[in-house]
Structures are given as structure tokens and as C-alpha cells.
Length: 88
Image 1 (cartoon, rainbow, N blue to C red):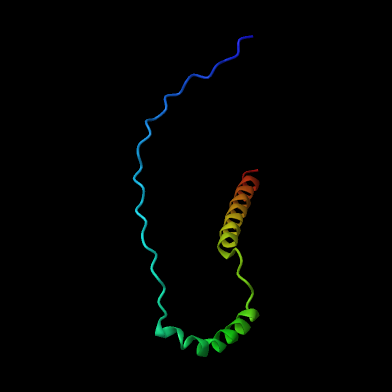
Image 2: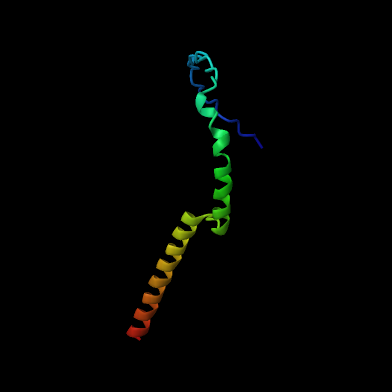
């Protein structure tokens, strides 16, 4: 049996892409704002304690959307079932 040969696809002409010019990385300079930060370090230690009491909200948006979709479908099915029973 003759083997089917793939038709040669026309290759697009390679367009020269301009090389991005290397931008010099900014040298980090020490700011005077860095000095008061060690004083504010004890404050974050108090925040996790209050956050530990709360439940982690994982997937709240997806769960909310899924729950509303299931609720809507169940309402539609319930109404459709009631209409069928009323017609009989």
C-alpha cells in the first residue's frame, strides 16, 4: 500500500526580531526607612495570633460559585418536577 506523504507546508519567512537592549539593573541603595523596621517587627507577631483564630478561606470564590450553581439547578429541577406532578 502506498504510504501517504505529508504535503510540504510553506514556511513563513523568518522576520528578524530586534534584540532588546540590556537595561542596567538599578543598584539597591540603603534607605533610611530600613532602620525603623526592626522596631515594628514585634507587631507582626501579634497579627498571626488573631489570624489563627479565623478559619483559612480556601477556595471561597470557587466554592461560592459552585454552591450557587448547584442551588440553582436543584431549584429548577424541583420546579420542573412540581409542574409534571400538577399536570398529571
